Amino acid sequence: MSDDKSKKSKRKPYDNEKPKRSELRTVNVFNELAIRIKGMDVKRETFTNASDGGRDFVVSAKTDDAIQLTCDLTGANPEDLPDFSRLKTKGRGKLQVRIDVKSGKTFSADMADDHSEDTTKNARCAIHLLAFTNEDIVVTDEAKERMDEHREAHGKRGVYIDYADVNGLNRLKDRIATLPDPDDDNEEKKD
Image (cartoon, rainbow, N blue to C red; front, side, top):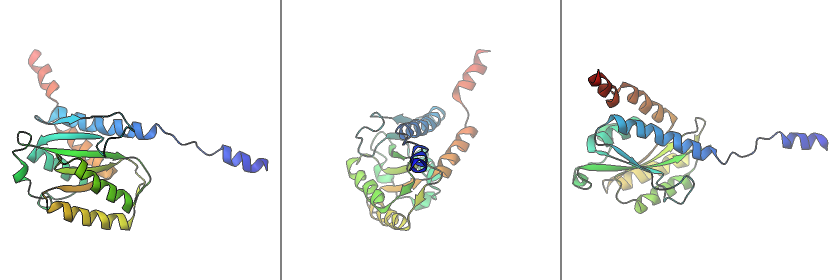
């Protein structure tokens, strides 16, 4: 009996702060990108774990920059994305990209459906992405199929829906490292 108790007590307790840390680290990546790309901005409207309609934060960017961001994150080719030209006049020529950060271990078909439903709550956004922060996440085959269905259906409306795994976030970090920091230029001008 005591052996069973010792096994149970060795289990690691659920870390309810992990989703918060994942979300904050992820938004920091996007903040750094926005510092380096003129005209890009990041808006975080709620506290972590607050009801947010699947919108942890929104990136507002010129159309070409939003497309590049989406391709960096998802690995999609620009020609695979819908034609956003009809949306360019909204938001002063910028597109809004909704990001919902997920730190769980599994991405299921139900989660894909929820992500799709959240697009209607966030109609101002042309691009809707889940950002997975768990390196070991399992994307079920059914979730992949549902995302393909949702991507096709939303694409007919000129809206893109997808997800980015940790590799996508790493590609974005690599890109950020190649972009000039505007503060570095200011320091040189002072000397």
